[in-house]
Image (cartoon, rainbow, N blue to C red; front, side):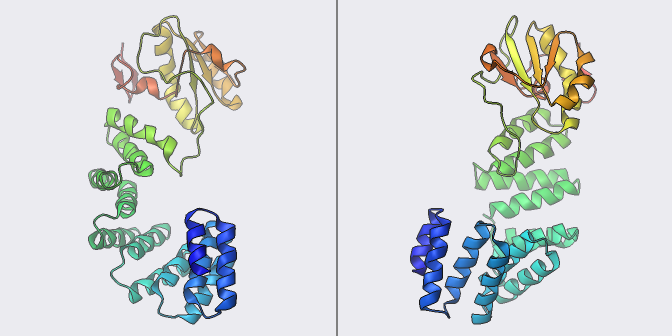
Length: 308
């Protein structure tokens, strides 16, 4: 039944997998691996307290099981019990000192505890043990970017995406680092990966209109929509009049709370909080995209604004 549970978990049939693990444990109460697998399923189901108990039971049955300590640390991280998580990762490493994943997870705990130098060293050990560990390369890049060591961060992100060419989080993170470094063309291109990143909460409006790629837009209707924080919208809205200057009929879909602030922007930009007839529009885009030199041909100084 334990193996059946493993197969069901791979199929993301987590409730059925959990039932199989429970049956395996019923028939063999001393089956430590079944408790570990049960804990993993409970962790994915976000039943964290039960997952922790399952890993604790596995450790009681098999105190030298490094994976149980590591997975216990993962639960404790989700519970925001950071010191306890770090202790579990340290125990896992003591039992199995050549496992890159344990050092990567330990780095995450240290980073959240603001022990940044130790976190960086832990990510470095993870990469040294397994140079193909894309998550460790990405996590190392995130920390280096926080430390404003941009060249090193970019090198880590480059390595992560080379190892995992569909790694949306790493591409998006690299985009932010490139923007901070003033490499705007590359940064905005990488930033498009955010839509595929699991950690990104923004949503595209459901539009039939294609994203504008710099075509002649005179006389065409274009819908620009805000999809991130209010500060980002306020920062980039200054570029919308450039579209109107090219003859576009511009509508900006934004949160209701910003409409009053933004309406004085330009008489040629219609600021709205909702749209009823989305099919009216020929193109769509996000507010930062007029500043993207990949798509927008006029010269733009991204620090100070449009250049005439």
